[in-house]
Amino acid sequence: MTLVSIVMGSDSDLDIMRECANTLASFGVEHDIDISSAHRSPDRTAEFARTAAARGVKVIIAAAGGAAHLAGVIAAHTILPVIGVPISATSLNGMDALLATVQMPPGIPVATVAVGKWGATNAAILAVQMLALGDATLAAKLVEHKAKLAQGVEEKSAKLKAGK
Image (tube, rainbow, N blue to C red; front, side, top):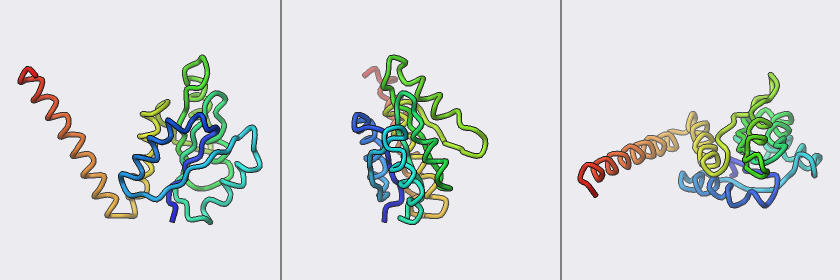
């Protein structure tokens, strides 16, 4: 069953959102990925959001660049948590997408992460954290993930101190 649904405004966002999908896969989280546009296919986007819970989806990750309204439009049509990933698609280097995603009115929250690949990875981790609230196996995987991050820092520090 799909627990996390990744949706992006354009196929040009796919390279970045593969990071998100790969991170979810590394935790064993079932997910799907699709394209829908808040502006070019508003009915499709609304239907996607309205039917997500009935499809078993627990978290939606929405990525868009420019006038990035996708996450907000989806959040307006569902009670599921929505995580927005701003994409750098214009000469503004993602600032337009970041502000469009994060500046939601009261009552329509969108959890917003960093612009680009770092954001895509963190969106996946945040979705796993949400799911782990009710899943001890996922929680254990997150503990292991954090331990690996800490171990990586220790190894880099030791290498630096050894002059390598």
